[in-house]
Image (cartoon, rainbow, N blue to C red; front, side, top):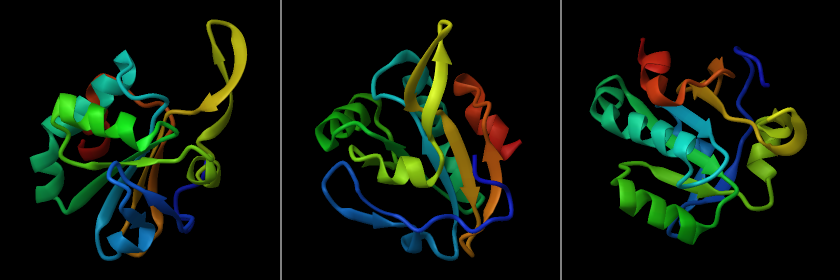
Length: 148
């Protein structure tokens, strides 16, 4: 996991509509950059919906939200539409952003070691510095972990 106080790795990715999204687009703003395993799974849906339910609070406090998974743009569009998510999701099928943010690697599921997305959230300040790194994400209460 990347450490608090270090520069966030620059990235360029495509959102659910194929639009380019870069870290530099968020200069001067606080960014919640969250990595999740898969659209429309129970934990990922709970996390996304919790962030969406609190979106107004995030905006009031100057935050933008951006999710990243290896799912396709089409999958992201369906996920956003089904749950009325007010933020964009980046498709990272080549794992470039996931690996840059150390959100891809070995993990244990049901006692079995697999390789996959490690659910992680980074808060990046307006200067591009990681101000917080959350490794133990509570999918149902994730907004409270970030906003307090």
